[in-house]
Length: 127
Image (cartoon, rainbow, N blue to C red):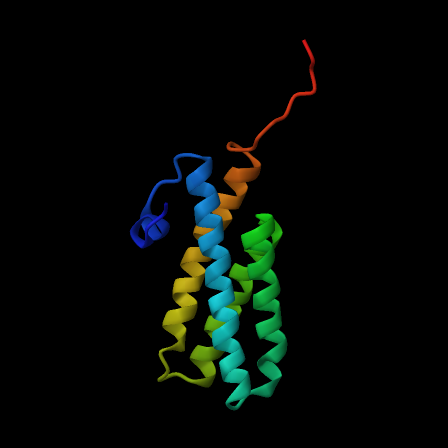
C-alpha cells in the first residue's frame, strides 16, 4: 500500500510498490481529466478534447501500465500547467497540474521499472 508521502517522495523498492505508484499516477491523470472537463463545461468548451486525452492517458497508465501513456500524460500536464498559468494567472488550477506533473513523473519511473527491473519473466522450460 502506497501512502501519499511514499507516492510523492518514497523509494520504489519492489514490484508491488511500482504497481501501486503507477495506479496512483493513472488516478492523478483521471482527476486532471475531471478538472479539465469541469473547466470545459463552465466556460471553455474546446477543452473537452484535452479532458478526453487526460482520461485516455490515465486509463492506459492505470490499467495497462503503459510507459508511453505515462510520458504523454506528463507532457500534457506540463502543457496544461503552462496554458492555465497564462489564461488564469490568479487561479489555483496550476497547483493541481503541478501535483499531477510530479505524480506523473513518479508514475513514469514506476512504469519503466515495471517493464525493466521488476518485470516478470516466465520461462517455458519444462524439466
